[in-house]
Amino acid sequence: MNGAMSLLKTLTNNGVEVCFTNPGTSEMHMVAAIGQTGEMRSILSLFEGVCTGAADGYGRIAGKPACTLLHLGPGLSNGSANLHNARKANSPVINLIGDHATYHKKYDAPLNSDVIGLAKPVSHWVRSVADAVSLPSDAADAVVAANIKPGQIATLIVPADCAWDESVDPIGQRATPLAPLVNADSITKAAEMLGNGKPTVILMSNLALTEQSLRFADQVAQHSNARLFCDTFTSRLPRGEGRCSVERLAYFAEQATLQIAHAEQLITVGTKAPVGFFAYPGKVGEFYPEGCEIHALADVHEDAEAALQGLVAELGAQNQALRLNPLRYPGLSTGEISPESIARAFSEFLPTDAIVVDESATAGFLTYPLTETAEPHDWLSLTGGSIGYGLPTSIGAAVARPEAKVVCLHGDGGAMYTIQSLWTMAREQLDICIVIFANRKYQILQIELARVGAQSMNKKTLDMLDLSNPDLDFVGLANSMGVAGYKATTANEFNLMFERAMKEPGPRLIEAILDVDVSGLG
Image (tube, rainbow, N blue to C red; front, top):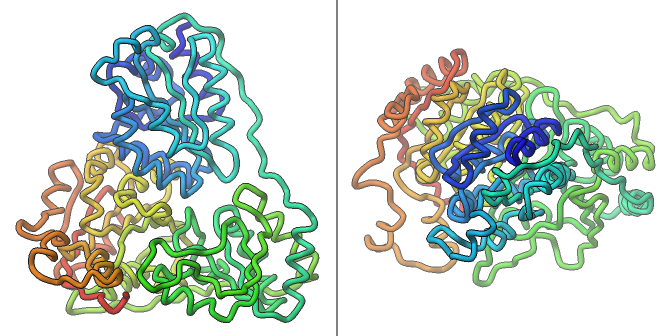
């Protein structure tokens, strides 16, 4: 058995069932091994950023890693932006990166590069295989590393000769690492803070945002009169009917600082104290008030759910009735299409247990609040801020849970970064509906232009943030890659198209033509 075959069997023995691929010459033995085994599903993408984004979405929903298969350093580099997002989401991902044969590296061939150096900034764990005999053990180590809670990026670099040389038997199933429990003193400290009468904010993310964690947190908040918040962008958040609500921290500093301006104490659970995405002239970088006492109940890798359960017990809040969301629809709009009319239809027709992948940016700002009381659903956000995550992440989510409808809300500018995703959606016949908010501009950057104090609104400046001349045709793009595309220019048209899309299997795309001014958001 060669190294590639032992590698693949080791991965499947350890629960890795899907590989998002864009391989090259140095990966051909791994390609052959996937083809010879019936246990690994291979999904081809036309760009490496689609592979890595799809692996992110799969990891968020499946709770275990898929792998990517990428070609040398340039292939890894093409996928790095969405690996950055996956790393910030703490998603479990295994990257298999081919490299030149160990004895060929010395020639510094045209595609030779420092693959380890390229991998480190977007990985938690990196290893280059020394020989074919080591390969299966290294692969098993990569799976363990990726499964460290809530998830890690593990990058395994496989020189070509390590894949084709004779290897040893594959490694059997290894135990999945459990999230460590928090120290009892951390729970005691949090309980003391919540009992001292000072205004307190609890900020949660990652393992603290399971449905059960939110229930525990709701009991704590009611018992202690604390306010619950989650990070602005979260890996996965259960929402809608029957779930406990949590307020989302605003993106803009002016709004976020106002939300928690009253706080004298901040307890973090599965996250860190909140700071701004960027620095702005004359504005604060830290969202919490000066002098606010900060305590970490559980860090990102600790068992936040168990910590919150322990806090409920410490406070004696077990009998506190939960505040569960009712099912309530906002009603449809008619006439002119707008962000509000789209958000109303989205909330009205979203099916039970859907997965929402949100990269709608400024134009979709009403979809989140209007779905608070929609059917139960999961909400996935752009955790790392590198745009072009939405379409690929939808692929991974749909592969991980094929019985669920996936709805991708996407700005037009960001969608063009990974538009090749549509081809993979069609090829795999995934049940995904994409809503493109087509405002023909990078609206968020027009807002940021003013926020950073770079006041220059002349034509030359605005042309750098404009997506017209020529207009993008997303319906044409979708149809060219095998996805049914539709264009909505009125609220009535969108209502009918979206309702139909929620009842029929995808993939399909709806391009909503908008003329949006959201300058007031900044």
